[in-house]
Length: 97
Image (cartoon, rainbow, N blue to C red; front, side, top):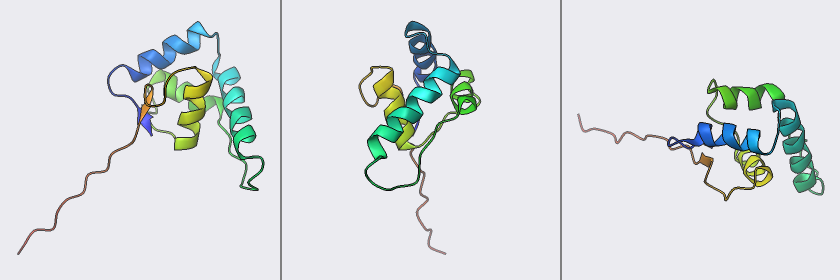
């Protein structure tokens, strides 16, 4: 998933400020939400680092996993798809020689 191209990063920063999350506190909340969602599945532990949140906030990073994007949107109380949209891949059709 990637931050929405139309104001996704600005909305992300605004919501972090509104709900008074630092990069560290949001990363901890996301990790706790991921733990809550996946604790019964025996899957490897998913985590979110404060540096990744900081990179999303600054614009140095624009993509994250679907699970992390979903957890961030839930914690910041926005509808799915408001902050993050699916990353589209371009496929080139084969050409006849």
